[in-house]
Image (cartoon, rainbow, N blue to C red; front, side):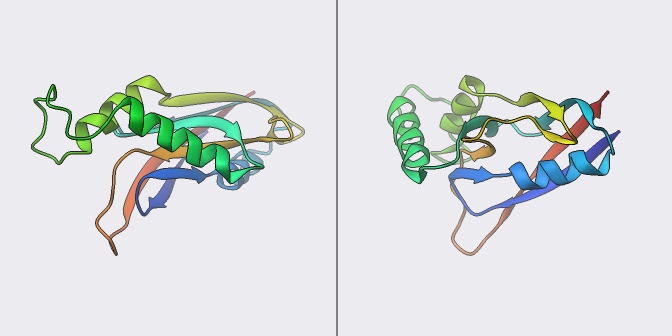
Length: 139
């Protein structure tokens, strides 16, 4: 069974999608198995990361922006804006899918773990971008 999730984003950053994915997994009525989450984009990614201290998310964003800065003169793909090529590189450095065991009908994450959609592109103020994910459970 596969479900599509639409995640609205309002710009760069990490969006905790754990509850949305757990809802999908619980709809499968599967007590044990494997959940695979796949993002259908090339300028956003998925990660599993700490959910307790928001400073972790800020540090990850700041480090990634330093590693792959906008307006780098080596980029030739610039027609979609100064954040597009860096977003593609950031996506290539992270993950487009994650697989997580299903335990007792929910994601088998650790106490301090959450699943995040990592949006790598800016969004025009007041405009929302939707990101599409596929959630698949096998058992």
